[in-house]
Image (cartoon, rainbow, N blue to C red; front, side):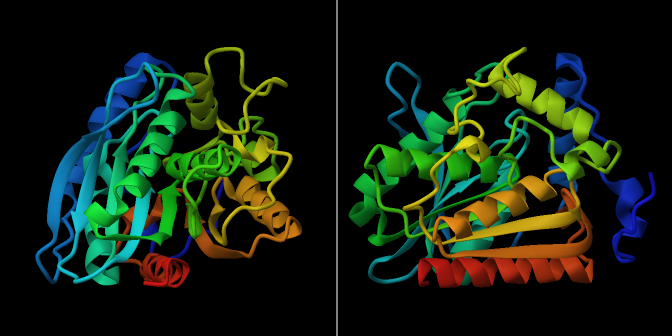
Length: 316
């Protein structure tokens, strides 16, 4: 199928990592390929010294501690805090995946960022990932003053599967009476295991992410045979949540030629219907992961919009 990609993205298509997920062997190869791509990408250079340290925080009951990476800018007094959750289809990625992004947020926004190294599927299936993220959120709120965070300005953000985990974490916080969240940023979120939207069924060969990869992702996360069944938890697939009221102000982003496009748009519609202040950012000619092409005008605009949305949502 041909796609009307943004002209600035076209020269880069052959340089992006080809990701085809069919079995565990292909997943191991994809993990190695994504790590290699990251090492070839110039890191973000902050304009000021950012204190970066790794911590182990108490994990879910009966589970290992969760590693987080804390980014603290040299700002006096309390400042907003952001729990950030990396993407990777629930199956790829680590703290290094989002290191440059988190450095940028701490540097440009003057906020404390807590990045979560949640366990990956299929080695750890649901609910391990979202429980790890929730544990990191609870730790951040409990340690707010020690971390230099204003407890009234804690947000949760994530991209792709990280956007889905961010949405699930915020639902858990609401339903468990957990930490108050002032804002959630759901970047191209992966939130619906049913894979029935028009964009999901149509985009079977788009770069980086497509219907076949989504099938493998959800089967790895939920376990074989559970995808699309009636008993999938809304904390795994937030599109399944029947009540979206009482959630914090939200920004949802979508890319035009992304199989995840329609589930993001539908989630934003339902948030709005539930009287949650919600804004949607849609980017013409883009595909899932096109942000990796940092030199394109459209992706520069996406990056600028993200910083602006976080600044406003966190009152930074």
